[in-house]
Image 1 (cartoon, rainbow, N blue to C red):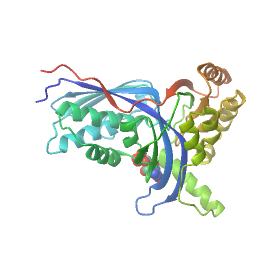
Image 2: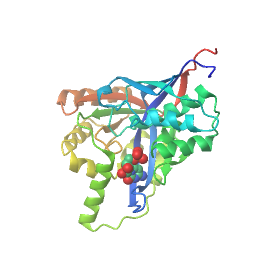
Image 3: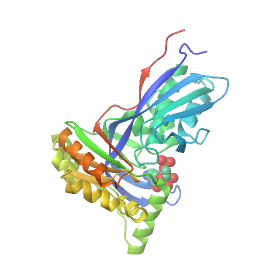
Image 4: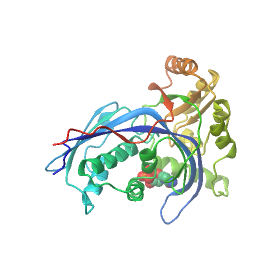
Length: 310
Ligand code: C5P
C-alpha cells in the first residue's frame, strides 16, 4: 500500500504561439507539426486516492461536459501507471477544472499529465523521464508538453519537445466559445481546404522570427510572429470567431490567433493593463461566452499536495 493517502497535482493550460501543420501521415492519421507551446496560468487540479476500483468525479468550470469513465484521459493515465510492473492499483480521481473544456487549450491533456505525475508519486514508481514521456505521448500529442510546461518547441506529432529560450512574462486574454470544436474535425477541415486548393504541403518548421522574439523577450515581435495553420479551418467551422479576432485586434492586442484547434481565441497583450482593456472589450461585445486572463510561461504538471506519510 502507498505511503501517501492522496496526491494532488496541478497542471496548466497551453497556448500554441505558432502551429505549423505539415502533411497528414496516411498510416497514423496524424499530421506532422512544428509548434511552439507555452503553458499559461489556468489550472486543473487532479487528486488521486488509492481505492478498490477506479472512479472519477469532476467539478468546476465545464464539468458537465467531461466524461467520468475510462474515456477520460486522466483515468487512462492512472491505469497505465498501475499496469507497470512497479505500478500500484486502482485510484479514485477527482478533477477540479478551470481550464476551458474542448477549447483548444489542452484541458484533457493537462488532466492526463497530472494523473501520470500523481500516480507516479502515489505509488512511488519513480518513472524515469523517457518512460514518463512515452506514456504521455501514447495518451495524446499534447500530453508530454503538459508534463513539461514552460515554453517549448514541439515537432513530430507535437510530442517531440525541446525547451525554448523565452525571456519575460506574456500577458494573455482568452475569448471562450460555448460551442466546442473537435480536434480531429478541425484537422480534417484543413485537409479538405488544402485539397480543394490543390496545395502541396511542405515539411513544417517554426519561424526563426518567433524564436528570436522569444529569446529577446520582445512581446510585440512575438505578437507579430504568432501563426496557426488550423485557424482557417476553425474559422470555416465557426465563422463567428472572425469577429472575436477583429475585436481583440481593434483593442490593440499585440497578436490574436485561434488557440490550437479552437474555438478559444488567444490574444497577446503588452501589459496587465492592456490585457484588462482587451478583456473588457471582448466581454462588452458579447462575442465570447467567457473571457479569461492568464500569464505565461508557467510550470508543467507538479505536485501541490503530497499527502501525509502514513
Ligand atoms: O493526440 P490527440 O488524441 O490529442 O489528437 C487528437 C486528434 O487530433 C487526432 O486523432 C488527429 O485527428 C488530430 N491530430 C493530428 N495531428 C497531430 C495531432 C493531432 O492530426 N499532430
